[in-house]
Image (cartoon, helix red, strand yellow):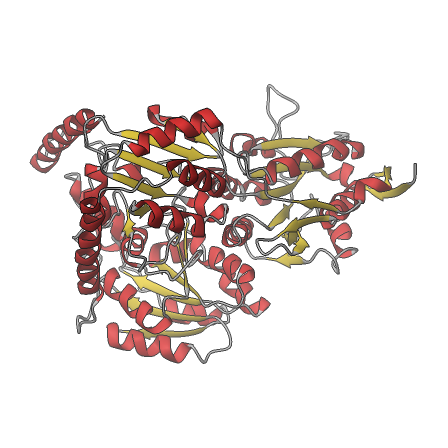
Length: 616
């Protein structure tokens, strides 16, 4: 057997470079588009030298923050429907633990991410090394053990030959439609530099195709029987529709059987916004059309969604007595939730098989017509919310309207946390798949700009618009500099409402007094006056500060001519939201309070909880 002598780190990157993927159009590409790296004493010698030697086949990208570079890697794979991915390497200690938040985000969103943090010495001779976490009770613990609960697969590489088993296992998880999620291989820094005679065949090119699990015939029959009896069926499209490239199958199913479709945050853009059966967003941040139909639905076909509380209105949205839930999902963990009829299958394969089994079944015409009327009414309400005005402090909806009018429906909107996800879920109008990129599984502030960078790397031919509040901007903005450095132009709209406006509204809605959210309501001696435009300019962007919707549109239009990342800052009203649509959300209110507003909110909460229990 032919062998090649390499360090463990050299073997890792050579193996990654040999992995190939089949894209949606049937063409092949390297599975790993590159490695994000911030070097330190736990990886600069081993992984740094290894990556230097293979940079023509496996590019290395330098970021400014470890969490941000992992966010960029996550956004990259999400924008490509999980068909390609990236790896991230850091030093031990804070460099590694900075990525734990990103690992949790990937875990929640079922997205592949390979994390390669440095680790302490396997040989332990120099212990304790710089940044080493020492457990008084367990000598095997390092900071990287923080990754265990947020990784689908975790391994610590303490001998160079261990990667012969660890890397194939990692690949099996990263490319599995059901198990997909983050993988952490903690690389002991002395082991990275150790050499071993690896079999040459270990580095042979390997093609990974995305499997499409077919439905079980008995589960298929049960699901079809439930739908055939339905008088008021609704489809809820989740992120699995996009990951399965099942948008055409979804449209064909809806059209053939007259079933209207509502979209989750992850599933938004599964259908074009103006498809006649697209009800729009559903749940807490849902459209009036989608939520009205969901409340009456007697059968709900949930496709590729884990049905989190924002989608289900904390399980108070679906009110029809005797309703049935069908969960079409690759993962039984999700398919079996809430006493559903499980249909374990790939989204596209499952929809095709279910449609064939249904035959000529179609929902009653009056149900489909009701959906059409609801969609028309909702679009009018959305147009009104997004209409331009001369208000000095526009609403988030008016800003979204301005962005839409200038950038068009083919631009990709990127966002993550705060009040914007609710408004964008309702109002953004995507022309097709992957036109809406929202991280709302983990709702992670700081994802927005780094995520936009990852999306632009994946979809360089499309305009990428990052919508971000001042709070998230201040948390993590460093990858503006990376976007400029890489020549990847983003359009970033910073909505400055001077604090955490979304949580302030929630605080007030639960009876609380405005406290510690808007800057004016915090403990302070002097209120900060942050010049976001100058800050963005200092990072290399072209930046403009504007007042009002008309000036915002003019700045966005001018930004089209910019050759590097452009940032537009606009002051917004922290209180106004789109009133039409939406649904109750279960946020526990204190049972005891000295304030009347909280006691009143508690009474309303108890009444809503009774309705929630009755709905279930």
